[in-house]
Image (cartoon, rainbow, N blue to C red; front, side):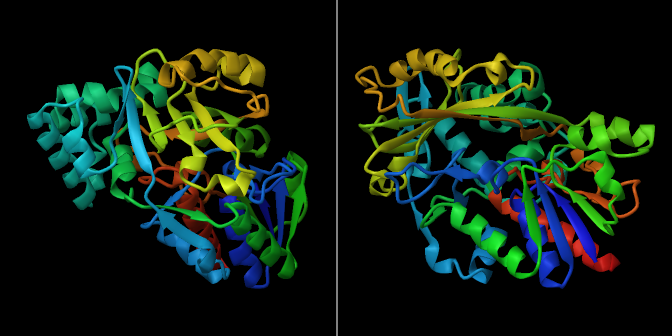
Length: 417
């Protein structure tokens, strides 16, 4: 069976791997010149390992990703450690990644710390996300964490990620998914996520599949004799070229919202977060980014020529000016705020080696009762399937669920063959 897959991200590659193993002739269309999508990477000459365009790690609970790695013979390349996660609030970095760090936090009163711990424990143990999807995250978090913890911890992150309006509409089921699967230990691959991507590409090629880089799927490709087509890219792009979709269906897909991401990668001579924080959530009003992630506080700098690697970025509406600005312009926007985090840092630009990465489709906006509107894999077009970030609900987008989505859409096709 001839099968076309649109997009060589982890969903498209996983689906292509599964389907090609069963003897199907798979062709993957990728408009970029690299595979991996948001998990794609780049490498400087002095580095032994490549680096992802956007910060990446996985959890001990990420079963689908870990199972795939083992299946591909990469289990020995997987490792875990426990880097520090902190929040920046009131011009102060405070660890916030364990029950003990919460109890020690100067940001909360003793009573607020207990309430925060109990609410988080409930989210870790409950599986009833369908009950939670009936309310917004802001309503639930105010009620069960308390107003003050909500204002200090969660409200700034929700607003930074989704904007003022959408932050008030996001379903608590989405937030539950963020907490439920998080683990104290974080995982990574020796050699970065690129070794997983390369292994999938190798297997697809071995199974007589092909990946066409710099090749966008067009309207005419719907008529090229493919017996199945799987679309894993942004839904608006699908709507632009898909033939004869019912207006009601188009309307439902058009109502699905997405925010984009902008991310700077700075190559520094010296450590930026001196307390060894890996992931710093910005809970301070007015900052133009939501996270500062020092990759080399998680992964040894020796793998990158002993340079320090710093991600600085956030999520933005798709019409945000950042998507039209140069890396130099965005760097100048971010720099004063980086100096607020570490006033002593001199930014010896070796950070003149910095790069900008952006995507208009990085995070679905999940409203309440989303299970009633989430699209199915099947579409009104015969033998055409959608498998996008909108389909991973109730979980949050990430590499594990990109792999799971690729598995699921492949199994959907297997049921029909």
